[in-house]
Image (tube, rainbow, N blue to C red; front, side, top):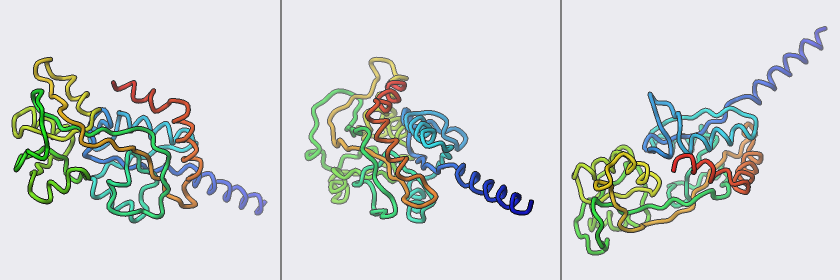
Length: 240
């Protein structure tokens, strides 16, 4: 009887460990259609659906940790995040050797945006203020910001950066293509913000913590299967 009780306890402990939620990071600076955050919780969006589906494929629950972007960086360094999606190596200040990169699942296109169609050249925009997002890296533009050729005006989220552009707080902003399309849905035809120039096109992927308490290889295989099955495109189509 004692052996049976011990076996049941060990089985219970093993089941509990297997059911631990996978910790996904969600940056507060993201905006729809990438993610909708309400009362500090992620509730919808491309990345919300992607991460829920990924956890489902490996038989785990997804815990969405909504945090400031710089806080996420610190949590990665301490191994407090199991999966971070929608990242590119050029956007990270650390190599994060304890994480493994997945296959890329989409391309993020960053655009220079204005209120009206026009021909622009960033090299001739001396001293111009550009709407940006706090903590975001813009590898192609960072040298221009560092030299003072262009000035950053950081907003807390991508949506706020576009709202400030619409309100004429500045004449230009940087936005990814999907967020710009989503933002324009609320505007009359004559007031829609205009893409002026592509400034970057980066492949984005996930990084998965490579530790025994994380199903690292099943997660990476699930991402490959989702890409091959067209599941990423299906998720994106819901928000276009």
